Length: 290
Image 1 (cartoon, rainbow, N blue to C red):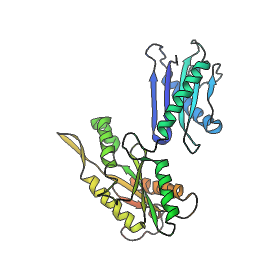
Image 2: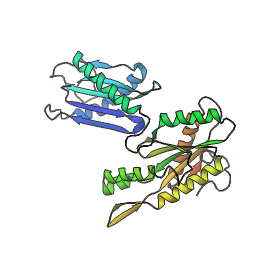
Image 3: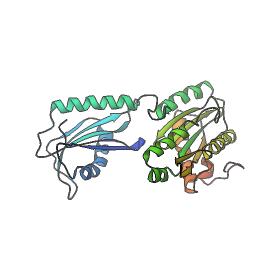
Image 4: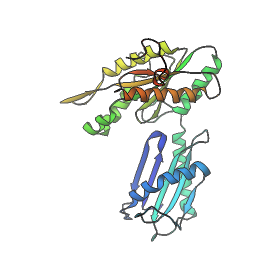
């Protein structure tokens, strides 16, 4: 691409990767990217088309102008997932048709990876795949109760800062391995949302039974440790639960509510299960929180 700096940004998956050219020195490229990426994402959400700027006219104060080639990354459902972007100093040749062609090719390859049904790091389903599989069950069993749980690994930043990111990845993988039998029922559908966050669809479960399953998961997580032989850290997870309602957007609404419940439980020091009713301040049923 003959660029001085490139970046891949996928906000929902907490991915923000940058790569500086070893040949073309650009000392302020990272700062330029940090100042422009939000505007690039906003532009992509509106237009969902490549953006080529060889004669830029605006930059943040103190940040030199950059020639820019940005390409949208789009999910199967048509929503913007992120952006692949390349920068050049003004002294370098323009981005041309060849770079635009190569950029589109790279973007399509990354979209194929994004749109696969499985998360490459854990082997779990992606969020889109979980929703697709859950929708089939919901449509086939409309009169049964179904629940969604959002699961977050507690204190992962402590693991990363204390032992390094390899141990953080190990913690994520070990929790992912718990999201199946015998810890959870055989028919659960588990996926990775982003980073250290997971989603589990529990078919045929009401709030009470879903809570019991999540508490069993917490017990199993508490038995795990990561770190060095001289120092180990105990793992724990926080869970938010919501029951699915009827309607075309039932999954999305329930997942948003479960995420809210999970955040509320995290604010209460984590390592617990919280329902959306409890997070919203409504009276919960007895025994829903550890």
